[in-house]
Length: 162
Image 1 (spheres, rainbow, N blue to C red):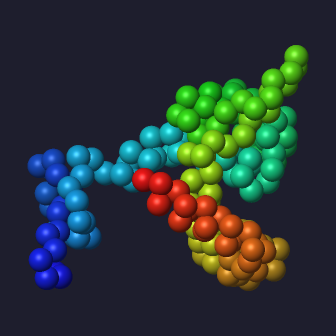
Image 2 (image 1 turned 180 degrees about the vertical axis):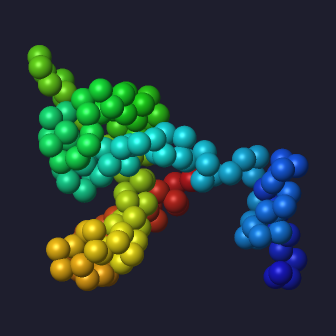
Image 3 (image 1 turned 30 degrees about the vertical axis):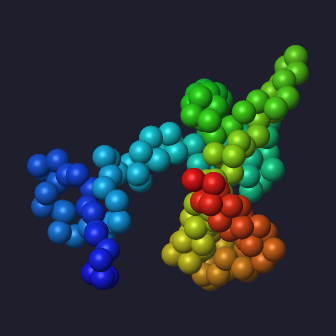
């Protein structure tokens, strides 16, 4: 490793010791895996798609989200909205007699670079499902360059706030 740099590995349970030799060198010691912690709510079915609806599709109302998310039921959407709100990813910004409007919180906006990475991955490796012509595309063919830069700039701002 580098001169004078101490590299830490996450604490491992006994059954995980076998994979420890394959881990990347970390500069700090983890109590648990940050990926696994992040997937607590985000890993739930449709959670990232609901965030996508708000952050990328500009859909903020219940029925709008149902229309743009195939397979999503009213029951599951209602449950995920409650979980995402409780987890601090979204908040109700407008409530009427028969509707609510949600938007992303700072924590929710911090997930947008993750979604951009998934768009990039899907556009390259699942082009046959994603595009009519079945040809892989780079991210800048999918989004305007200024939008990509804005999302990535927000990521840099968010990481500087830690």
